[in-house]
Image 1 (cartoon, rainbow, N blue to C red):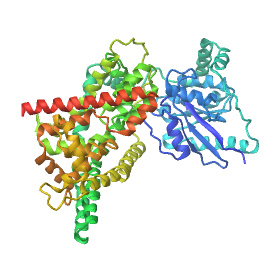
Image 2 (cartoon, one colour):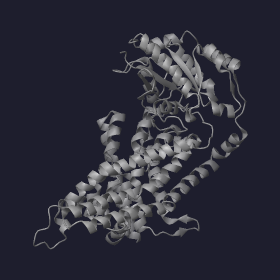
Image 3 (cartoon, helix red, strand yellow):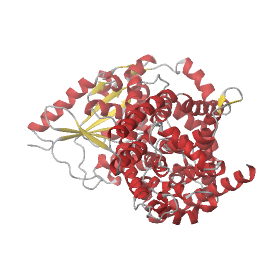
Image 4 (cartoon, one colour):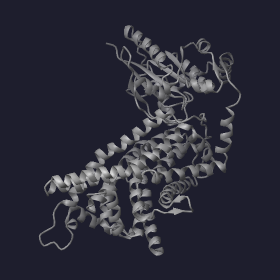
Amino acid sequence: MPAPIRFALIGNPNCGKTSLFNRLTGARAKVANYPGVTVERRSGPIDLPHPAELLDLPGTYSLFVTSPDEQVARDLILGKIAGEAKPDVLVAVVDATNSRLGLRLVMELKTLNRPMVLALNQMDAARNRGITINTAGLARAIGIPVIETVAVNRQGTDELRKLLAEFAENHAKNPLPADTQTLSLGQLDELSRDDSIEELYQRIENIMLDNVVQPEHLPRWQERLDVVVMHPVIGLIALFTTLLIIFQAVFAWAEPVKDVITFGQDWLSEFVSLNMQEGVLKDFLIQGLIAGVGAVIVFLPQIIILFFFILVLEDTGYLTRAAFLLDRPMRGLGISGRSFIPLLSSFACAVPGIMSTRTISDPRERFITIMIAPLMTCSARLPVYALIIGAFIPEQTVWGIFNLQGLTLFALYFAGVASAALVALIMRRNQTREHYPLLLELPSYRWPMAYHLLMGLKERSWIFIRRVGTIILALSIVIWFLVTFPGAPADATRPAIEYSFAGQLGGWMQHFFAPLGFTWQMCIALIPAMGAREVAVSALATVYAVGGDNVDAALGSALGQSWSLPTALAYLAWFVYAPQCISTIAVVRRETNSAKSTTFFAIYLFALAYFAAWATYTIASWLV
C-alpha cells in the first residue's frame, strides 16, 4: 500500500488557505480576515477514496522570503526541513480579488516543475466587486488546472476535492516518483534567472489582460469608509472609542448570564451540603471543588463577550487597517504596524501572540515584540480583574454614560499597552534601525461570517472550560490540601489555616511581599497562578474558606473586609506585569532559542511587577 499522497496549500497571506483547509479536512483551525493567522504548518487527512494528507502552510508572497513564517512555507516546499518529505502536489491558493499579486507566487512555483493545481478563492467577493475571470483561459495560460472556490460556504470545494481524488487515485495506481532531492537557494535562484523580474511581471500582466476584467476602483462605500477609519486623527479616536465600548460591554452585558451560573453553583453546593455527612470529603467538595472551580467559571460570560467583539473586528477586515493606522506612532517606539497583529493576538493569549511574531522581518523588532507581548492583558487576567474591581470599585455611572468599573478595566488594559510602549522605546534606544516598510494587503470589508463567529466563540469557550476542568481543577485541589493539612493542634490559639502548609508557606513569602501590602493569603494565591493566572481566584476562594451560596459575591465580600483599597490596587498592578504563566515563558524560550533572553524576559517582568505594585500601594496609601 503506497504512502498517503501529500497535498500542500500555499498562497499569499489572507487568501483563504485556512478556510479551505478546514473545509477539506473538517478541522477547526482559526480563520480571520487579516494576514499572518497561520505561522506554523498544520496537517490533516482528507476524506478521499485513497489515503491523502493536506498541509496548510503559512502565507508567503514569494519563495524568496523575508520573515520566519514565510521561511517555514518555503523550506517545506523545497524539502529543506529535516524529517519532512516534500509534498507530492501543490495546491496554490489565489485570492480572486487580487489575482495579480497571487500569480507572482504561482509563476515562481511553476519553475519548480511540480504537480500543481490552482484554487481561485473568494470568487463571490470578486464577482461582487465586478471582477470577471476567464478561468478556462487562465488554466491554459498557466498550464495547470484552475478551480473556482468560495471556501467559507463550500462553493467549489467539491470540485477541488474531486480533482485531488484523481491525483490520489493516480498516485495509488502509479505512485508519483519520490522526489527526495532538496533544492538549494542557489538552485532556486538559477531557476528564476531564466526570466528576469521584468519579464515575469510582463508575463503576469499579459495573463491578466487576456483573462481578467476588473474595475479600476474599490466600491465607493469602502473607499469612503477607509477615509474615516484610516484618518490619522479621526481613525485613532474611532479605534479607542471602539475599545472603550468593548470594555464597557464586558461588565454591563455579562451579569444576567453570571446570575444563571451562580444559581447553578448555589444549587449544587446546597445539594451537597444537605445530602452528605460532615467530614473531610464534604469539605473538599464544597470548599475545594465547587468553590474553587465555580469562582473561576462564573467569568465565562465576560470572556465570551470580549472575544465576540475581537472576532467581529477580525472578520470585518478592520484590524489590518488598525495596523496601518498605528504604524507611524509605533515606529516612533522602535516597532512598526507589523507588530500590531501579534500584540493584538496577545490580548487573547500571549502564546499564539508570541508565535505570530514570525511574520516580522526585522529580528530586533521581533525580539522586542516578544518581550512586550505579555504586557497585553490576556483573557486569563480577566477573572482576577473582574473579581477585585467588583469587590472594591463601586458600580456607579461616570459623566452620565460610563460605568466606573468598565473605566477601571479599560485603565488596566491601557496601563499594559502604555507600559509596553515605554519598554519598546527603551529597548530600541541607541539601536541601529533598519527600515522594513510595512507591506500588508488591505482586505475588503465584509460582514462578519456567523460561522466564523460561532466557531471562534466555541473554540475560546472550550479552551477556557478545558482549563477549568484540568489545570484549574488540579490546582484548586492542591490549594485545598495545602490549606487543610496539617490541622491545628489541640492548644491552638490562632485560626487553623495559619498552621497549615499554606499558612506556613504564605508566612515565609510575606516577608518579601510585605512592602507591597500583600497578606500571606495573597502570596499563596500567586503560586498556583504561575500555572494559570485565573487560578488566583479559586485559590483566594479556598484560602478564605468561601463556599456555599453565591461564591463570587461571597469572595468579593471577604476580600472587601480583609484588604484595603491600596492593597487591592497593588494586587491589580502586580497582575498587569507579572509573567505568571509557565506556558508563556516556555514559548519565549522556543521562539528566541536563547536561555539568556528567556531569563531576561522573566526577570525584567517580575521586577516591573514588583516596582509597579510597590509604587501603587505607596501612592494609594498616601492618598487614601
